[in-house]
Image 1: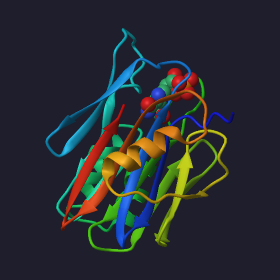
Image 2 (image 1 turned 30 degrees about the vertical axis):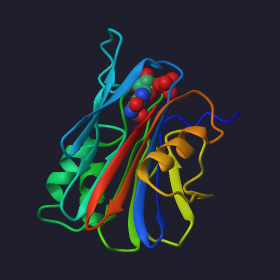
Image 3 (image 1 turned 60 degrees about the horizontal axis):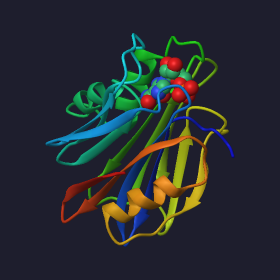
Length: 196
Ligand SMILES: NC(=O)c1ncn([C@@H]2O[C@H](COP(=O)(O)O)[C@@H](O)[C@H]2O)c1NC=O
């Protein structure tokens, strides 16, 4: 089974945008997601000095939801106070760059906008930095990941609520699953769910 590390994506379901995150990990599988108000954090449960394994993963704003695999989540949410999603992704990914770990792990992020059938994916690795604005299509999701995904891939995903989306994302056939997070637009706001 393919190992993609951290993956995140965006899609459209019943005319509403959604985002998802799946944490796969070979090295730090003992982690959990903690929901605190409009934020979700990944908390590593073992002792380590690795600075990349506990971080704010989701930030829900009035008009946007931001999901990422590192502390860029917070900076992107701040940038969105002044800038477009495209600029926020470009500026913050460029400023923080890839992670200085043994794998040069890329930073990845997704932004979705309330009430709009569009989303933005971003990636910064050792060899490339890209940001893509995506026109969302019903029943489809587009995702990227830290390892072994060439740019963006497509998936079919449909669901009736955030819990079901998180469950389906956790069941996708990629190796070393730890947890999944779903963020779904609901009546002008956001609903988030975490599995398991
Ligand atoms: N965000 C995360 O959950 C996360 N988990 C692991 N990493 C980084 O990626 C390295 C490899 O981890 P793994 O073997 O679990 O894929 C870790 O040493 C760490 O530096 C992460 N950094 C980015 O994805």
